[in-house]
Length: 321
Image (spheres, rainbow, N blue to C red):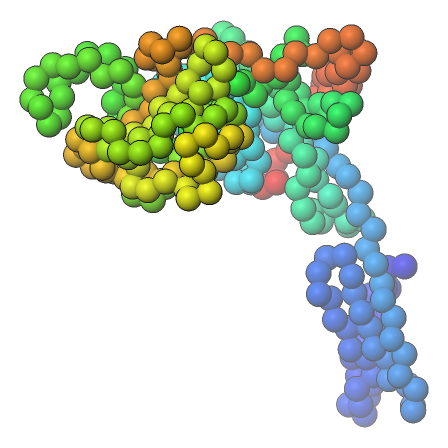
């Protein structure tokens, strides 16, 4: 039961201690009552319930600034960036006038106090005239993933940017080499980041090369299947947990940003190879992930319809949560 406010006296007229109230968190409150020679202790629990929140914001300069302006918590912003990172180039795809929209869960007390954030249930990026909605879905094997409106997983077999918080500094194509001083084909993309920044495996596969490799410096190549491989160069060091021949899962840390080899500063040089030929990671059509079919697709469509109806009824949250 909730503790009535008129019982929260701490002393009587004589100044004698009558009660101590201790609230370690929003969910629990302990009271110790002193009555003559008797001491009584009680625990009061605050019940919380799940509430849905709806936010939409126009992007004027960057997704991050728009999210902060809307009061979106950092954890949900990072989750939204993660689920779009397989398809969206956040350096180049976002333009002024684009929009984002999300629906997420929060746990609130009977007085409406938000205690914690829950799942991001829905997200949509409106880029130009195109919408990219994603829906959270729990598959029959217990896995949780985000799917587009046709039931295709947002998570692709390969990531375009296998590093967090980096800045794209050099694209794929012909350029003037910063060290050699003449035009030379750049067969990958460079991401500037502080030395020691973790580098992630862009996809699951087998490490087929992990050593020094000429101008590449410390270099790793992962074979993902018979068609695709990825390469990572100029690393400061490797993750000692993985050797040549090791199996890695998408998202595992394989090494750290450095400036070994022919390099002017700390950065990651990243390549995607299709049948052994280097391709532009920012433009290559990524291998598709899971596609829902049969009973799972029917279940997903039901959840999608439920989310669509909830969005139509939910007002936009104006508070900073």
